[in-house]
Amino acid sequence: MRYHYGRRKKYTLSDFDYDLPEALIAQTPLKQRDASRLLALNAKTGGYEDKHFYDILDYLNPGDAIVMNNSRVLPARLHGARPETGGHAEVLLLRQDHGDVWETLVKPAKKSPVGSTIVFGDDIENPIMTATVVGELEHGGRYIEFHYDGIFMELLDQLGEMPLPPYIKEKLDDQERYQTVYSKVDGSAAAPTAGLHWTPELLDRVRAKGVKTVELTLHVGLGTFRPVDEENIEDHKMHSEFYQLSQEAADELNSVRKHGGRIIATGTTSIRTLETIGTKFNGDLTADSGWTDIFIKPGYNWTVVDAFITNFHLPKSTLVMLVAAFTGRDNILNAYKHAVDDQYRFFSFGDAMFIHK
Image 1 (cartoon, rainbow, N blue to C red):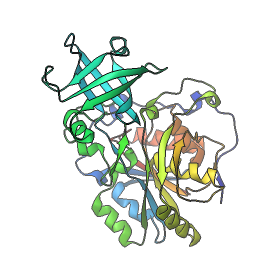
Image 2: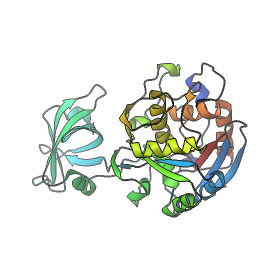
Image 3: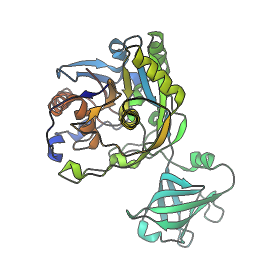
């Protein structure tokens, strides 16, 4: 089962730009998760409707499946000190390499050569945790090995901060608002934000309507915020992210498809996982895990996903290109123009779209 939308055309980076007033970038989450606005877009006709997220039930049919990414964001930003000088050091965890060695970004990097030490906690003389720089990365990052007593994730909860996207300047009062209500597998450096709109009560209503809810895991990396620098988008190299789909989840989704239901992804991370597996196994779903650097852009042949929920994405980003691959470039940019004109809230803490055929 393969779907193709839009004409095959050679697009450039500028084709995915749009004007966004800075005032529309949401700085804080709404008090009620599912009170976000929802722009429902028909990918075939380009028509759209203004709704609220709790209206998503109107677009779901018994026998459909909602797929959700259960990855949980690590409190991955650590503030430490250099024991020699007392100078400040900021460490951002990117991914676990092996054991207690992590790939990180350190600021200021030039003061963190291999062999240097960073300590964490209020007392430099008696730190809660220490780290040694054990390697350098091509992009200026560092491999760091942590030393501690106890359980690393518990210490991270004690010492770390949520690594909010760079366009969010406000302080987050409740760190759980940058987690989905179904998050459970630690590993992301950023939230799968389309899922922030779901509440337990709304998910119960979804299931009561006869819609399946299925979980997978994709650990979101900070590469998701990396800008595309090449005007020729074919030259852009995608970042890699780790994904996992269980056999139980694959069987449930295959059953939904067999009986005519739709696979509806919550967010681009769920899309990337499902389409990676679908591409790998010729449209079939099976248990699988690994690293994906799939780049979905106009001209892509869809193998699994029939509809999806997503937030509004940055201009000239790979995520706008992904959505355009499903809707066609003109349809998505017209919808974005309407969202701007109608004062929708944008990006991670912003409003949502439901995109369907």
